[in-house]
Structures are given as C-alpha cells and as structure tokens.
Image (cartoon, rainbow, N blue to C red; front, side):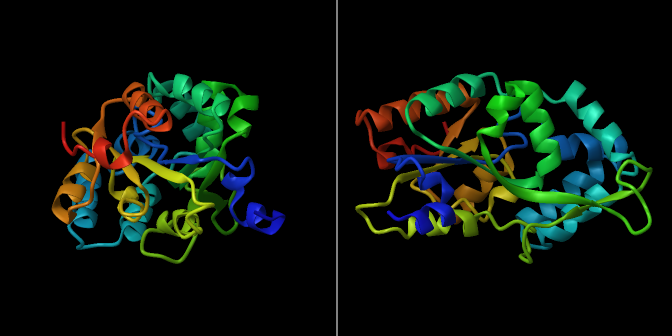
Length: 257
C-alpha cells in the first residue's frame, strides 16, 4: 500500500488487519449529547422522538430532522459544552476497549452525525486530551450565524459534512475500505445505536447495534446481520475472540440477544 492510499484511507497507516468504526453519541457515550441538548435546552423530547420516528420509517431525511432539533437550541455554544461536560458520561467499557485497540493495532474511527467540537471536548474530558487526539473523527461541524458569534444566544448552527440526506453519510467513509482488494482489506466492524447509523449499517463485516435502540429495529426490518450490545465490555469480548480466531464475524452476528 502506497502513501497516497494511506492518506486517502488514514486508518490503513499502520497496516491493520481489523478496523473498528463507531458512532459516538449514545454508543461511546451513555447519553446522546444532541438529544440531551434538545430535551433540556431545545424543543423537548416529544418533538425529538417524533422526528426520529419519521426518519426511521422514511418519512423524512435525517438531515432536516436533525437541523430542526439543533435550531431549537438557542443556548450559546460554550455554555452547551459546559453543560454537556457535566451531564454526558462515557460507556463503562470504552476506555478498556480503547486501550486494548491501541495495543493491538485496531484503529478506531469515529463516524458521527454530531458535531466535532462537541465530540473533541467530551473525549478530552473523558479520556484525556492527548489520548483523545489520537482518534480519527469524521463528523459535522459548527459555524456562527451571520453577524453573530457561536457563543451568543442563537449564534450557532450545524455545518453538515456532505450534501446527503443524512448530512453525514457514514457509508461513504467506510465503503473505500470495504472495496479494497481481498489481500489488503481489513475486517471491518461498526458500532451504533440510532437513526444516524442507518447509512453505515450494511457496510461492514460485523455490526454491533445497541440493545433497545432504533438501529436494532432497522436491522431486523431490513434483514441486516448484526449482534446487540449493552456496553463496550461485550464488544471487546467479541472483537477479541474474532481477532484471536476463536470465532468468525458470521458466527458472531447472532441478532437480538
């Protein structure tokens, strides 16, 4: 693999045999930061859940529904960050998984429908700044509204990663890895929980879907192979067994537990 390929596909830099793609909100964290802001600072849980349901059943694009959620939040961005640092917690098994992955050359790539400044702030708080900076993050961004600062009331808005109906089509990041020649292609994992993960659900070799969340319903309806998880301790056990050759990705895709 040449340097051009490594730049285009940065997770290949260390020539891994396995790559772990993952959602952030509600997957690496126990709560979804965007849901928390919407429920507590924006238009509330009822409208948010209605929007998620519309996306899940194809009545609306995630992009438009999510923008409506975030536009309902008028709190200055720096105050949003401060509140999230106090209220969002890390999955109890993620730190151990992160350390094992680093020691065993399993790159972790965060693919998020959320906003990179929020993710960076939370990871720095939860893992430490140096550790957080080692993680590749592909997500949306934040920008000021015309004539305002992001740290003013009503001063910020989301800037989407691409023009898709998802705002960030996670499949576009995974697909180039999936299409590598067999002798170069790593085994690909993905972990997620909700409607922002629908585009990624069919792209990897093994999908971990969080128990009791929307992604499980979608996978069952669309016949997408998956296994469920409660937290990253279960993911770590399964990935360890696959890496050690004790089981296969096909055997691990047991569906709803």
